[in-house]
Image (cartoon, rainbow, N blue to C red):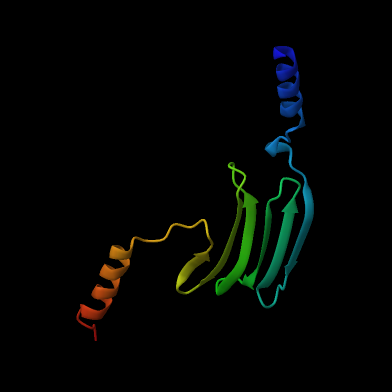
Length: 114
């Protein structure tokens, strides 16, 4: 019985794909030299995927996906502009309600700058 367990473990290890050997399944890249607008997308054999579009120095929007080491699918959508990088996704931490309340209090009670 022990030999069967060892054999099955060795087969499982050999079947598992080495992440460093992932191949690119798709890669698209379009850049408008006059406008600075761009679009790109890629996907790899280990399940990593990203797509984005934007205009250089002005804005970007897109998403990326992968599977966490625990086997959980992860997807993060984002938008970036003059207000900074704004990601959204289930895996991102959310602030404690007390922190959000304190921020709201400060926004409403700090003196306005002229």
